[in-house]
Length: 308
Image (cartoon, rainbow, N blue to C red):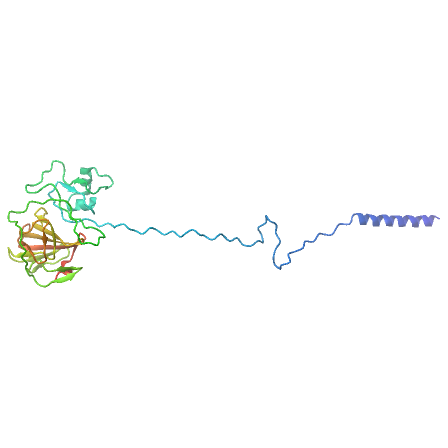
């Protein structure tokens, strides 16, 4: 009997143990179904990893194109002036630097005499180029004669500064249309050029010489090297004596210095080969013609233009 009870108790304990295992058994890990497309990750809406690379929207704004530069550009004004003048009227291309250079004064003096700040000047402004109390020499007026070169224009009309003349010498007269041959003719830059006199060359261009000095005899003919307009006729520029300046177009002008007499007047139109003066030695140590050719105000070697 005792033996049956022991066996029965053993089976009961085994049943209880099996029941406990069933109750505490760990469930299997859930499985997640992948995408049906190979290599494509499944992501949530707020998870960017695995999504397609970001592509920025196309830039539809037009590319920046700078405005075309329509400015005329700067051309300095280095035309001759009357160094005996007390005032100067500002012309196109004038700066504190080139005004003081032409009147042979310092930039500091020019600024001081005119209360100029930061080198600011404007067209038409009248500047003192001599200290207070200065009195111009007899025979010279207190205004300047400047030549302004127009910029980027297609016409050949000459624009000149306002101005007035230094009183010419008593030998000055108005010339006739007489023309003189001084040799051949050469065409350069659309202009027909000839030598301004038949004399021999005493001094060539270069170094301290801004032009050519032609020798000859007193009273020898001096002619216009090309057709143009007389924009200066006087003796107010130191070292040039009786001087004539002829402007041929917006780019070129010629100067004829040390003359014995002047045969033209300002504003007069002259033709190539027309006599405009007689050779002399005013402000020179010998009888000669000092001839300069300028392009946009800058001295050039006349031999590049004239038949030599």
